View (cartoon, rainbow, N blue to C red):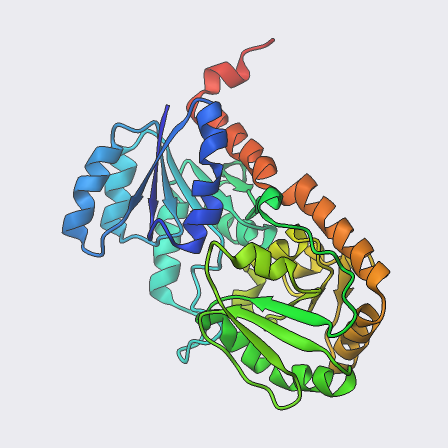
Length: 339
């Protein structure tokens, strides 16, 4: 069976983690996945939509299309799926225009109400989709990582202890908002350093920074070469829709994680089990100080996080959900046949 995914670009992080990563598992289940990057102009998109008519299922991955495009896809496709991993009906946390967007909301409504299935990256996103789509059409498929792609951190280093943050220039804005707390950590915990894996970097007065240029081929190893993963996001409607990729990456590498309990971070980082939740500067300082001084604790929490990935957020676990949903949509007779 043929499945066509319409994406922003094939190297976009959402395509890599939420579509392309599952290709080998889908193929073993009998699904031929074809990925098309959507051009910017409608005139160049229409030929792709025509090609998609031959597919058994079409996945619109995160793109909020014009009403006309949604109508064409609805008319031309056998099974239409909308997949997303952000609060795409909003502007992001750093937009000067604020969160609310009538255009984004209208486009989300247009696709959610007619899609045969809506796959959301977390419960918060799924709950919003259920305002427009029947509940039985909405399923949660979390963003997943491949733990086999990550070397496991040894957790033995004592000096200096290295915090790590991975992201892009767009999300680095959040870390800049968190600057005052990180400065306090640098002042309070002797020897601690911050490794930034990014395409842009920050400097701090009291926290030494190791700048590592992000590259897909070295990202996993650079994360594993640190000691403690950190995640901070603003407590706002956009951030509550985030799917916590960096937390999953830290845990795949066997790192304990410190994060503020916003959105999925509250579920991924179980206090005292896979890391520590921290909100105030005092809590962040205490968490870093505790982990910096106890290598055995770092190893234990990191190992628990890795097990959590393997059981719930691995590519293999996510692929099972994808195959289950595609079978339900594309092979209903086979799925419902007794025995």
